[in-house]
Image (tube, rainbow, N blue to C red):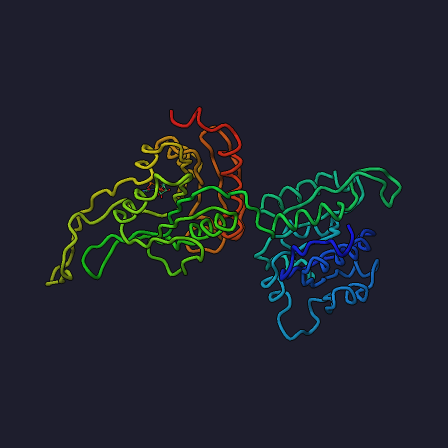
Amino acid sequence: MDEAQTPINLWGKRLVLGVTGSIAAYKAVGLLRVLAREGAAVSVVMTQAAMKFVTPLTFEVLSGRRVATDLFESHEEMIHLAVPEQAHAIIVAPATANFLAKAALGLADDLLSTMLLNARCPVIVAPAMDGDMWTHSTVVQHVQALRARGIVVLDPEVGPLASGQVAQGRLPAESKILDAIHAALVPQRDWQGQRVLVSAGPTQEPIDPVRFISNRSSGKMGYAIAEAARNRGAEVILVAGPTSLTPPSGVTTVSVNTASEMSDALNRHFPSSTVLIMAAAVADFRPKMPVGQKLKKQGKSELVLELEATPDILAMLSARRTSQIVVGFAAETEQVLSHAKDKLRGKGLDLIIANNVAQTGGGFGSDDNAVVVLSATGGQKTLGLMPKRRLADEILTAVRELCFISSRRESLVE
Ligand code: CTP
């Protein structure tokens, strides 16, 4: 494509381009030029082996930035933390088998691998290596592990390699790498036309005017889904229990406190919605008789609270639906998949997101999460530990794949 015609798609995006020690390292120079032309600010990080193939100066001139090569070099900031924290995406091209192994195992013995461990943004990896290395069982396992963690590992291309062999091992074409970057960064409008009702956060069930029963939900997952759906073109209504999060712009947020208020708000908006995503952690029980005045101790050594069940909002809405797609969450601490399947069937849902809230690194309050998406038609997709914002997008993609695209009505309710 002519330079003048190149669309400015990555304007304002901060990218890290990691270059590792493959003969294909020279191709990263062309990639850097295209990224810069699209308006991205690119920081290049090279491994020691990469510098045997191309000099940092080449990247420095083209990026207009100093090339980082050394974890122990002194910088004004903690470069291994600051750069990935600020980056919109990290692209590793070319990625050697050695790099894939380090990334899969979480080793951090140089600047690039350490940055990867601090990444909270999409990571795209474009491997290049000899054909026998790419098909080696160890490399295959490492690629699987990285993909399960949500890292985009592109397939190398088939063609003549440096060894003279014709096999799968060539760095993916620049256009393929660019497509992956665009897919990760330039919002798709694939939810345009959908009216999405999302619930988020906990509910608070009053005991008296100053005390309540609640749970540890932070609301982060539901808010992230609302934002992701908005970014992808949907009209979004967010019904949110009490959280410390800022209402997202461009989303109609309805604040509620109790399960009963959440039920009212969702019932009001459900008929005009096309999709319900019930991420809220609704209290299952509430005090039967909340009192109007603060309960006094009055010398009591114990207090028995009588609780009653709250309505199951999701089951009620699912039973009332006309053509809406209904998605629930299952917060579990054990037998996650089997409990989630029971809820999927029992509540008559199209899809359930099975969430192990006891897992390390994920669950309530955390910025990260890992889930398994199960559909009523038997579909299943595992989404490995990743930031909730990213997971939200993956969940929306799974809803599209499992509900909009595949046939969905036949086996909904048993
Ligand atoms: N849910 C709901 N109304 C309730 C309780 C739960 O709408 N009173 C919804 C949640 O928003 C979630 C799904 O039902 O989407 C499953 O919630 P979860 O807490 O995992 O399970 P429960 O159905 O409450 O069952 P249990 O607590 O026994 O696991």
